[in-house]
Image (cartoon, rainbow, N blue to C red; front, side):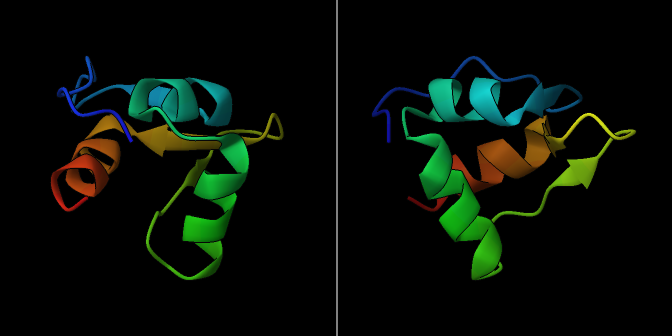
Length: 63
């Protein structure tokens, strides 16, 4: 995970690829976090998983 605070807007919504890039982790890491309940995601339509910026920042803060 990146050591510097990622440039994430708390009101933003990010795709799985964007979220992984911003946090400095692999996409499969996000999937593992989801599976054990550490990272909530929001479905937006049928186009895949999206993450709220506030949830991503919260995950970064507890690293």
